[in-house]
Length: 498
Ligand SMILES: Nc1ncnc2c1ncn2[C@@H]1O[C@H](COP(=O)(O)OP(=O)(O)OP(=O)(O)O)[C@@H](O)[C@H]1O
Ligand SMILES: [Mg+2]
Image (cartoon, rainbow, N blue to C red):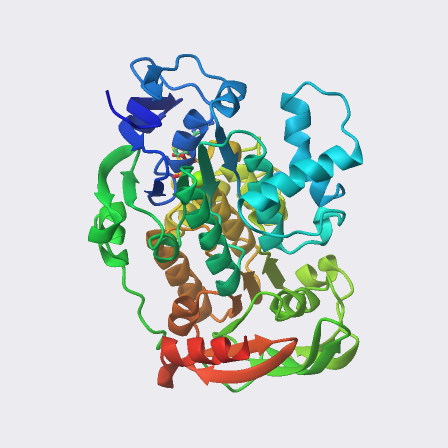
C-alpha cells in the first residue's frame, strides 16, 4: 500500500466533443509540492476540478485518499478530506474584514449560524500563526494588496485540517518580492506535511519549491518528472512538442506623422509628467513594478481615468476622452488586465462574443447579418490567435482560461482600431500561445496600427516592442530602444527602482 495522500488512476473526462482528460495518473505525497504544467486547454483545471469534487470523472477513473477508495465525491467531501483550492479570483468577500473572511468557512462547515467577533479573530489568529504571518484582521479585504488577499485565502484554507492546498495561477498578479514571500509560505506548509499543487504558467518561479512536475498535453499525461531534472526549455518542449524562441522586432515604421503625442500629462496620485510619442506601426512597451502607474496611464488614454493636466494628440488632433465610447469612436481599443471582468458573455458562442462590437460592419445592405462574412472573420481570428475550440459555436464558458483570454483579444482586434492598448496581454497564456499572440500583434502593426503593450514580462516586451518605457511611482524613469538593449539591462533598471 502506498503512502500517498492522493492517488488518481486512469482519470478521464469527456465533454461533448472534447476529451479533456484521457487516462491521467497523479500521485501526491504528504508535504510534497507538485507542479501541474501544460499549455492552455491541456486539462489542468479539469483535473483540479475532479480532485476538488466539482466535476465527476468518467467511469473507470479511480481516486484514493490515504489508500482508501473515494467514490462519487462532492466538493463538501473533498473539503472534509482536507483539500482546499485557491482559484485565481481568490473567491473572497471584498467588503468583509480579514478575520471574517478567514473564519467564514469554519462557520459554514461547522453548521453554526453566527460567530462573534472574538471567535472570528481567534480563528484567524491561529491560522496566521501557523504560517508566521501578520495581517490587519479588522481591515476590509478590498483594501488589501493582491498578495495579502492571497494570504487571506491561504489562512482561510488553514482553518480546517488542511492536507492538500491547490493553487491555480498563484503568482500572476504578484511582484517579485511578493512571489518570494508566497514561496516561503509554501515551504512552511510543506514542512508541516501539507501537500501543494501549483498550476502555473510561470514555471521557473515555482520550480524552486516543487519536487515533481506532471506535464499534460491535450488531456494526455506526458509524464511525471522530478523537478531537478527539468529546466524551462525542457518543460516547454514537453508541453508543446517544440521550443519557442522570441525573435526581436525588426520591422520598420515611418516616423513622419505621429499617431499619438502625449505631452507632460499628470493625474493626481496616479502618475506625473508623462511624455512620449507613438507612430503608426510602432509597438511601445511599458513595464515596471505593479503599482507603478502603468495601468492608470493606459486607462487615461482610453477615457476611463481622464488626466488632470498636459495634452494628448491623436493624429494631430487634441483629445481628452471622458468616456470609453469617445475613445472607441476615435479608434482606440483597450484590453484590460483582469480577464474575469472583460465582459465576455459566458453562455454565448465564441463567434457571437468576437463580433459583438462590430455587428454593424457585418450587415448586408438589407440590414441582415452577412453570416459568411462573419464566419470567415471569426475563423481568421481563431486561426491567428491559435484559439483552441471544437467549433466557433462553442460557448465561451466551455473554453479553458487561456483560450477565453484569446477571445477577448480577438474581439478587440476585430474592431480594427488605430491605437491598441494591451494590459498584460499574455497573463495566463502559455508559451506557445504567447508566441502566436505576439506574431499577430506584429502583423497588425505592420498594417499601420500603433500598439502599447503593458507587461511584467520583460522577455516579452524586449522582443515584441520597438521601444520600452520603464515606470516607477508614476513616472517614466527610463527608456530603452530594444534594438540596442538586452533583457538584462531592463531587468536591472526595474530591480534598482524597487
Ligand atoms: N464545461 C465544459 N464543456 C466543454 N468543454 C470543456 C468544459 N470545460 C473544459 N472544457 C474543455 O476541456 C479542455 C481542457 O480545459 P481546461 O480548462 O482543463 O484547460 P487548462 O489546462 O486549465 O487551460 P488554461 O491554461 O487555459 O487554463 C479544453 O479543450 C476545454 O475547452
Ligand atoms: Mg485553467
